[in-house]
Length: 137
Image 1 (cartoon, rainbow, N blue to C red):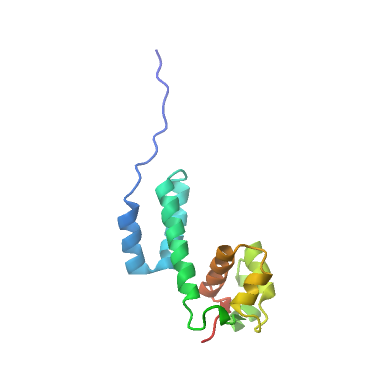
Image 2: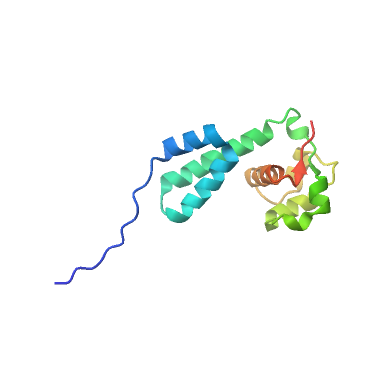
C-alpha cells in the first residue's frame, strides 16, 4: 500500500498572548497589520479571525472616543491634498474621501455612507491613521 502524503498545517500560535503583548508594545494598528499577515499563513484559523475582529473593534472604539464624538468633523490633510497619489485607497476609502468636505460631521457622513456603520468608521480610522484625514479637536 502506498501512503498518501498529507498536508500538515502549522500549529496555531497562542494568539491571546501574542495579541496582548503586541497591543501593549506596538499599539492597535501594528497589531492589526501583523494579524493580517498571519491570516495568510493560517487562513482557516477561526481564533485568529476573532482576534482580528477584536483589534478592529478596538480601533473603531478609539476613533469614536474623540472628545466631540459623532459631532467631530473630519478634514482632508494638506499632505493628502498635495500628494494624494501616494495613498493607495480602496474603493470604500476613496468614496468616503469624496464625502469629506470639512463641514459634514461623523453622524452626517454615516448617513451618506452606503456602508454599514462599523465599516465606515473603520475606514475613516484607517484614513486618519494613514494621515489622509484629520479630526481636529
